[in-house]
Image 1: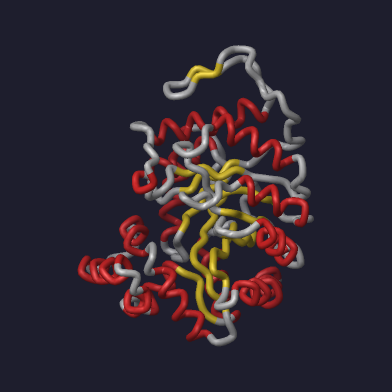
Image 2 (image 1 turned 45 degrees about the vertical axis):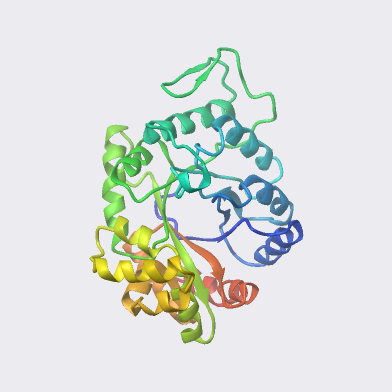
Length: 337
């Protein structure tokens, strides 16, 4: 990945019908996005079905999942699905890997050594996509000698993204990955923190500083009526803020505030949960407002060191209209700077 890139991507939850995935692909293809992402959250559709439906309708942007937990999908299958997607994705592909969240709630058991599992997952994906056949002997995964990918391989190396807020996993990304995604954040202050974590891994692997790009993305709501946009964003952020807020070392929060947000969110009273979220707090965990607000916020993120900004769901009060506003009004202004 280029070190000084300023890229823009958009992400979708995988809870749609086949025709809806295709319609979204046709819509976003009209605009200047660098990447199209789908999530891989349980119990929604795993990423590759939606990506394969969308790929024939995307002409320029690269496609990928952000991010897959190897506790859900074996790295052999991630590699195979990535190769299949690469065969039809006109703008290229990437693969995102993360530990995953709320796994136990869905009956998914994580490895007792999750960082090692992610290291080996990346190594196995590259093993298959590079066409190797010398076997693999890891602590978690083993592949017999002479086993190799039996399918057509991507023409170009596939970039790897690691999703994390953590010091150890960011360091691993510094050793092995091309990008780190800070998911659920719109806070410029966290970017230099993650950059320092990544740099420790880059030094261990003798990689150049800033070899690894930083992606930051969160709930995004844009509308010409900024107050309506921010009201919806508060409700959306209330779902995950109690989880991600404690991951951000630059944000000091009153534990009682988090308890209040959690109390109302657990009872599906997202309106009241959202009322607990101040403007400043909202701006650290969401991109929300009118197009001018979004442009200014993105400029702050780029200035802080982000290489790619990812607009997450729901995009707008009406999703399609939000995508149009991002494509027509936000992206052109960001391209000028």
